Amino acid sequence: MARKKKPEEHEGHANHERWVLSYADILTLLLALFIVMFAISKVDQKKFEEFARGTAEGFGNVAVPGKTGLLDGSDNALDGQAPAQKQDVPASLSQDRDSAIAQAAVEKEKSRAAAASAEKANLEQIKKQLAIELSKKGLAGAVQMQVDARGLVVNIVTDKVLFDTAKADLKPTGTTVLDAIAPVLRPLPNTIDVEGHTDDVPISGAYRSNWALSTDRAVMVTERLIKDGIPPARISPSGFADTRPLVPNSSDERRARNRRVAVVVLPFLPQAEADAGLAAADRTPGGGS
Image (cartoon, rainbow, N blue to C red; front, side, top):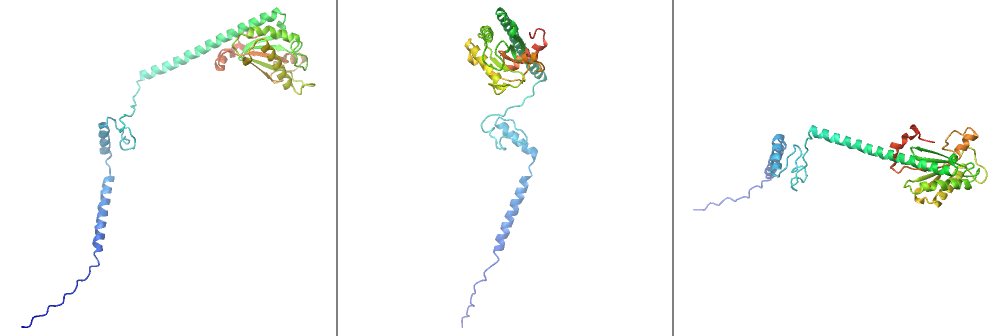
């Protein structure tokens, strides 16, 4: 019996659509990922605050809703240091504190006023001593003195006392006046300003301006006082020409008053404190002579 011949086996056709399954799997995974992300994005704020508070308490801290030391990047929960606690100050304590501050300000003002008043009295005493020394030498009329906001101002007229007209060489009378006031000023701790002043008549001759003349006169007086024992560190000269007249330059007599050198003994106090006690000197009886 003849054996049947087996049919020839053909290779199966290749499946070229298997990529569809892989693509579908990827889409499914992405969908699941987006669903999970969407779910966790819906945070229950209340539950989150409870979680944060409980976590912070475990570290010994008090959680602040919306800003915890664990999640906002701060290190207060990790370094073992609790944040500063804001405590309400009782009204009574706040009032006591304000009262103490006000009382301290009042006491400080009283202290400054007392110091300024004492310095004013000291300058008045210096003024009396200068008047006595000048009277001994018959020179009381050559000097005018007053205590004002700047301190003790000793105005020495230049005509027939300190200098000749348009000159800056000390006359013998001027030397005598300065030698009389120097011993009173020498032991003082106060700083001294020496100011040169002229009238408004334009200068002619050796000096090119009233500025130069007034400055040279202040320097000459300063050098004489230093020679008489005033420490150089405590005295300085300056010239003001006709910019600070005592009276208007309306007559020869008034111009003569403006031609002067002022020796100013400054208060031995900070300027703010000195002003508190000395600014009223011009308004009180006996403030000038």
